[in-house]
Length: 333
Image (cartoon, rainbow, N blue to C red; front, side):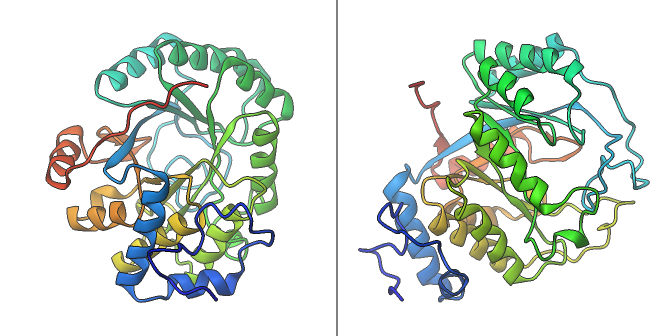
């Protein structure tokens, strides 16, 4: 095994590496002394990113509630009495109005989420119009719509969609404990469909659903060992939703959460690592440790789909205290 040190990162976009990262290698990294782990993660992070820049995204629910999936963590599942009222797909003009507000507030990526198992072909023309409209504002675009056919992915790619979000949520072993209406293999199939269409992949998971540390490591290895790791990796802390299957889940330990962020950074050196849902339950100190461990993207705004998110004022104050600044939009190639 390589020794963790600053001069030679364990994995620093190791193009010469021919074999997949092993479970034992990942466990060795995760279980290293906390200071060594964070130092290693920060070393890898600095090799690929400005350590004081954070990419800012805004997420809008363009179709809320009534989802046919039984994801145990979700307020939008029709299987659980969460009290959320379902709505129809939002009009294009309203989506673009919200996108302009997001851009004015400093967001460079606009993410649009619909509570579907998969979109119907009749909805694709409106989704295409949303993508084209947001792109015309000079922002990156991302959508999460459930499973896609190759034809649907092709239409979204042609419209200019930059990223497609489809989280794998947890390990393959633990997955059936959380979701039964869609298999883990189907999650991976969707990622492959998106990749084949030429769209960048956004895929991550959720911590605090009752999974073990080994499950978290397995989830990250699944992503890191894809033919091309996701360009964007959101790591969520479960927000227990009253009425959902996981309403009474125990919160994840803060140090374990930070360790997971650090491992994700080391395993996926060039991915944007997003500190996602659950930030309202995190102290400023915990978020600061996550940024030091390699997180370099957040969702901004008061709402994250249907749950609370730290407001712009709080994030701006935290950025000032930490000396962080918004990451500028990368120029189009």
